[in-house]
Length: 420
Image 1: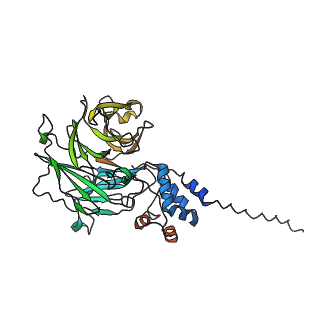
Image 2: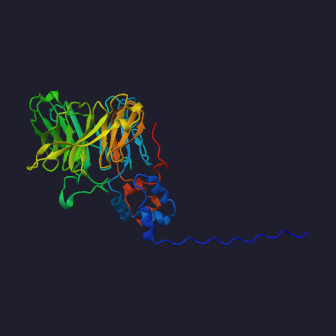
Image 3: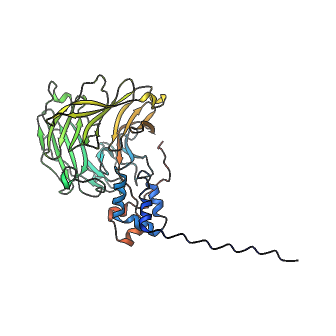
């Protein structure tokens, strides 16, 4: 019996063409910034690609191409944890520790989060003695800096607010930071305190490791006792132009802190029939102050401050009006939503509704449910995340300790998912 004919040997697969580094880099530069898992998968393809992505120049070009920084998630101070913060991702990024034991999120800017101690809550074992009232935390590297206690010298604090920002924010001119890669650089924390007699400000510098002497003023709001209209601690400050802005509890005035002169002043808000809940926002690429609110007819209104010929406040104008009744499901509109947060630069507001927390994209006018838990406050987090393999850093000699921390050891999802 004849043996069956042998099958012909299949031809050897042709080797893939060797793409020049410039073409590979151009491909990698097109990976969306709000999909960091795509960058990680690309870095895992081969050592050569990992080395390209470990280069500081690539990371700089990537961020320049995709500016502004995307929103990677938000921190919510949950009711069930007595106000302790938890990080909820909105992209493929996962922070090493989602729960911030003993601390609530107060503010976030330029890749950093400002946390403040929650009285009466438990701290992780071994951290009780090192607890600070304020901490600046990097969610990507998990590095945190404990700020020294502020020495107030018998100055009473009835209400306060605070903000964290890059130290180069108020530089101006050629020294101004573009905030594309300053997460590991120096930063400042501005603390605004208030009592029955005065409003005062202290500035912490990470370079000196100390708080400044206070800037203060007797800023009584005309027609109202100052103690009857305190600073609203639940509304985060906003950076617009060269100043930080905070709102008073009655929603009739805004407190302005000029970063260059470290001076305080008050800006009146327009009269509105309904002003139960509002958030400040930066408009026109961060150069103009604005605010957002929802009325009892489910109408979201964005206001912008107008400047007069002398550069002072000339009034307020309605910039945009959006009817939420056609943009959100009926279950979310059993009562009028409240605007509770604004994500700088990405044009996203957060709405507290009867169906939970929604993020609302102002550009596409689309709402998405992102959380069902009850909460006190929400703090959006925006930053670039370009994962770098430690092997690539060792091979190229590029990077730093900050880069080495932002590596494959941090879990990433390969698809978008919403928290429960």
